[in-house]
Length: 212
Image 1: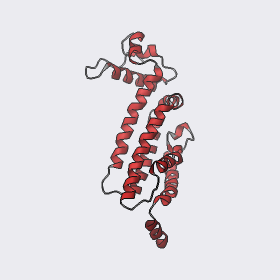
Image 2: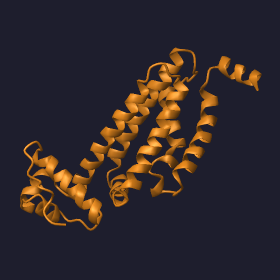
Image 3: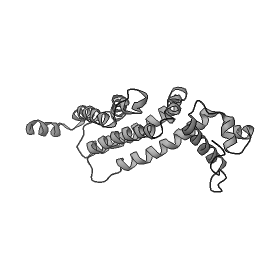
Image 4: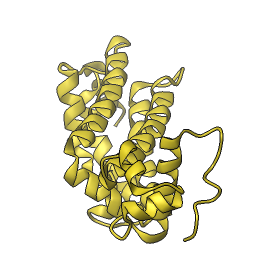
């Protein structure tokens, strides 16, 4: 692979340089075939110096995943804060964004799939933190829907957790049951319709029944 693309960048901290060098190597060779010594060499530092910043390769991988989760969180918050949008529309857009973001993350960088799977298996606490973030944002959507009379959700944390459980198939689907993105989006739409009917206010359900 050679020295990491002019890693000496005055605007980057040493930790950021290490993370970017490791990401490049994971993408090129895969997580399993990368060693800390190789990452250190790409950063033009000794392995001992590298260990001052990260105890091990899994810690670097976790940092990469955390940075990706921050990008995802910003996108999801933008959907939650959309003005003039119904709660159900926001929630559906939220779930579609989760699907598309994680699907394309692995689709565009297939060698990172091994890294993500390792983190899910070896660092479950981090996965739980990301899940809690997603459920918290979903809770904000549900609360707003309750406040305007669109939804009738009695236990928002429980409902958010159940929505998350019901849509796990659509998170990093290539790691579970591979299927084309459009097929997954159609399946997600069907699952969402079933969930949505149980959350809407009684008046909305009655109007839907009469219209049908």
